[in-house]
Image 1 (cartoon, helix red, strand yellow):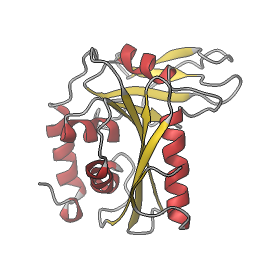
Image 2 (spheres, rainbow, N blue to C red):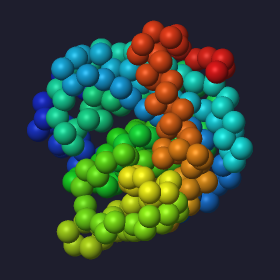
Image 3 (cartoon, rainbow, N blue to C red):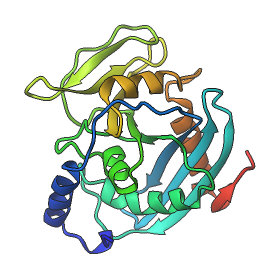
Length: 230
């Protein structure tokens, strides 16, 4: 088991390269009965990380419960290596889930990352879990702005033109979100699944609810652990 608190950035780079060789970008062919969203909150100058996973029935998107964890981390805040701050707490939140989802949507990137190893890919490989990255901002790649209407999207590509994901307009005339496969799914499948999770808001319901739960947890209005109370 990796002790993330003792890693240097060069050591983390080597781990990313090793994990990258294990990422499987392949169509997801299973049935989805449960889907989940994951989000993490922290101050980059603090050692405290708050992580949350919200479990929902699919395709109804009705919440089942949430798992919340607070953890102290020592790995520094370094862009492109945020998974090394976030994954340990997220793994603890995952372990608390009484039912594991068929697909996990992570607030962050999958393979749309300079080393193809965003948090969705990192977490997916460690848990052998189908994961999708859904990020609010671009980390890496090139794209043309999608059309102004909900459902419009354009490909997100690397410098060689390889498609890493899609830039999706999830709500009319709002900023797009960046969707990429993490592990055990592919570009087309991750977009298709995520589009089924978009409701009235810019963020897909699983990560929107996870974001809300983590913020309430951080403010002290939700308790740590697993709960079915919404």
